[in-house]
Figure 1: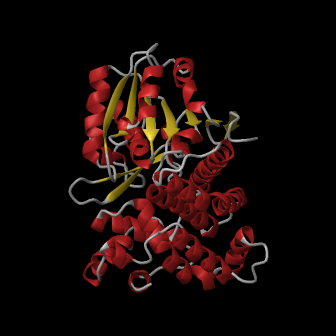
Figure 2: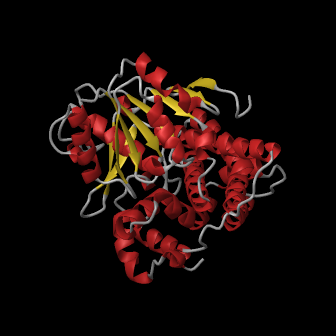
Length: 397
């Protein structure tokens, strides 16, 4: 299969994958008996030329657009989107964008028929049951990072405290994903890099997570292989486009292939991490809460320090990952070397100080990270003192 061919994956939901898959939106909605869709996207995506094409393709239906999403998604965006859904009399949702609009769309869908506050439905702390129908969602991803389009959860922050809450229910899984790599071709290099490292972090932490889940392990290893093949190439092509280079047909095809590889890797990461995540994500969630750091960028900067912490706990797993990216690897340390080399090649900031983080915030970061739900799945237990050490390592890298 090439990136220019459209094929179908039924795993874990129906995925139409390939160049031009997004053109199937109107037919997909009609097949789902959705006649008045609300399109949920972020304010940047809403300004892109191809988004107007997607809106125009919905002319046979009665569609409306909510583009009030930006940054890390918060409850107020969900509330505004729910009001837009109700005002339109919508009967389904189209989520277009990266992780933020995907998560907001899922939360809107949940609240259509469920009373109270969104956080009444927090995973593991539900005070209300999720027992009413949830409108159908069709997802069109535009980044290769969170893989939220194939996930059953939404991560939404409190407006005031920025603390993240996970909303989970199998009904939040979109019914259909239209995964069209052409929509990623214009992504800037910095966004490509940060979201790509987010996908890589999902894959690595899923493979390292405690527990026996060979299906997720296999998916994670192949996803890491795809990132090794395609992330640096995707960033390089983005930089060349930004410089004004006009691609010939062969180069344009290679660019599309790289974007398709990363789009697959992103979805594979989200599928694999049903096994669990780890300490990198707990550190990153705290950075988003305390410093409002972009989630993918936070993962990217924390990943080397977190993996140095984990290496001696599961050296055999690090060796397996090392041999995925370099068949001649001799030890798990080679995998850490590869991560650092990739980060440098795609211009990920080298340490937390480059993000403006100082030692003055470490205590607050640790207090948030230790409460996060990801690190209990880490292959090595993480204490308060360990979190301090990991953050110090990332600060002085």
